[in-house]
Image 1 (cartoon, rainbow, N blue to C red):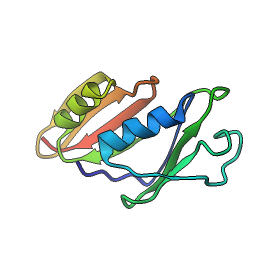
Image 2: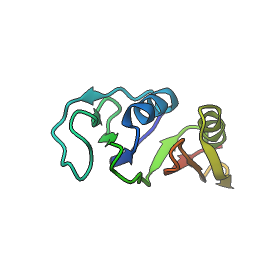
Image 3: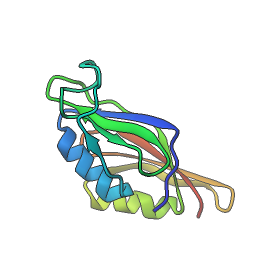
Image 4: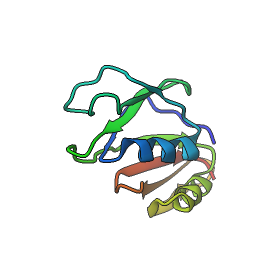
Length: 121
């Protein structure tokens, strides 16, 4: 599954679980230990992603409120939504749109963060 995002931050109460979830969903790998503001993540719990032509990270901690919203470019919106559900996410809507032009969908991850996917089919 391909993806394109300019920048993102995913913050949750269990960063390790979210990192595992997004690794399984999009194939992301993480570098742990980046210096990130305590407003974004507890020390040592933020993982930077830079291996897919994007930069951002997944972090947080027990004292931080979950939050995220971005769209990831995928080859097949329906397949991405189905995979998100298999991994414990919940489909919000989609696929919806005009096949061959733009199709979108949204799902929530296991912590309730809203994620958009856009692409074909």
